[in-house]
Each structure stands twice: as C-alpha cells, then as structure tokens.
Image 1 (cartoon, one colour):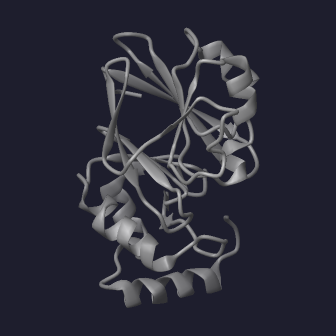
Image 2 (cartoon, rainbow, N blue to C red; image 1 turned 180 degrees about the vertical axis):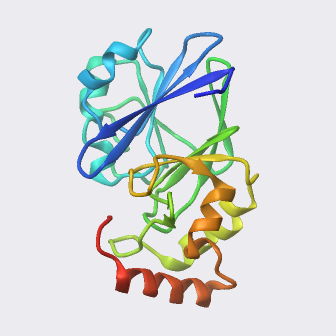
Amino acid sequence: SPETDFSIRSFLGGYDKNFTYLVTCNRTGSQAIVDAAISLDKISMYLRNDPVAVMITHGHSDHTTHLKEYANRYPSISIIAHPDSNFNNQDYNFKKIDNNQELVIGEMRFRCIHTPGHYHDSICFQISPALFTGDTMFVGRTGRVKGTKSNIKELYDSIYNKILKMPRSLKIYPGHDYGNRPSLTLHENILISPLLRAKSLDDFKKRMDDYENSRQIGY
C-alpha cells in the first residue's frame, strides 16, 4: 500500500472470498485488524506486537468466525463494533462505537460510520485515503438486503447520504473479493456499478431488483 503514515495488508480466504485486513501505523508500529474472517496463523507472521484492536464491520458470522481465537490469543485486544452487535458481552474486551466517532490507534485516526442496510450493525471505517466498507459496498455493487435485519431504505441512505458524499478519491476495501479486482476508488466504483448511479430510492430498488434477477454468484 502506498500510504506513508500507515500500510494495509489484505488476507483473502474465510467462508466466501472474505477479506481480513491488517492496518499498521508506520510511525508507532501499532496494528489493527479489520474483521476476523481469517485464522490467526495466516496473519501472525505479519504482527509486530500484540494487535491493539479488531474492528468489526458487521456481525455476520463469516466476518467474526475467528474472533474468539484472536481474543484468546491476545487478551488485551479491543473488539470494536456497533453497540447492538450480537457479540457485545463480557467474554470480550468490547468497545462500542458511535456514528462519526474517531478511533485512534497509534497515530492512525479512523472515523467510524454507521452504515445500516445490509445488516443493522454495519460500520465502515475511514482512514484517509482508505475506506473499509465491509458488506455495505463491494467492487462493482452494494451489499444485498436479503437477510434478517437487512433494510433497503437504510442501505440507500447509507450509500447515497453517507458513502457517496465522501471524497471520490477514497479507495474502498470491501469485506469480500466479489469484483474484477480487490480494491478501487469510489469514483471508479461509481463508473462500473449501476447500483451506485440511482436517481432516487425507487430507482435504487428497481436497480437492486434487476441485479437480483440477473445475479449468479455473490453473497
């Protein structure tokens, strides 16, 4: 990753082409993990010290499947997630975050953005010039709204009134490798995705129906 203040290492695997990301502060060496989809033995050789936090984009099991493994290995690690996440209990060092809250790890400053729609507890983590989007936005499309606690109106609001109002130069790092490349800028994603060019909520619903009717793979 070309950033000077921090670096991003991507790990692909998990249940369905899941990504886990390791974000390292190049000034202090502090590290944070985004999502717990990949087993620790795939990541451990890249850890400089005990990681400070696991930042969970949402509570679906494919993104949290190795959370217990991380927490057992690093008892002091903070689990950063939405207050309504289903693993908010005393078994973890859980730290809830609010919409637009800043999270500082080393000298890295993340902004936590509540983006419900695909799931009620979805969070995107922004550290310019990067945006970790979980299952809210993929390369080429948005997340889906077929599951329990999904809501297309909330997804539309999260995409159009939050993410698409952010700088178009932001590079998105999604929760799955579903596109023709692992990552791209927000501007590039708008150009290739009809779901990111809707004129209204009704238009978005129609485009989502069109996508679902022609969909062959993806989650």
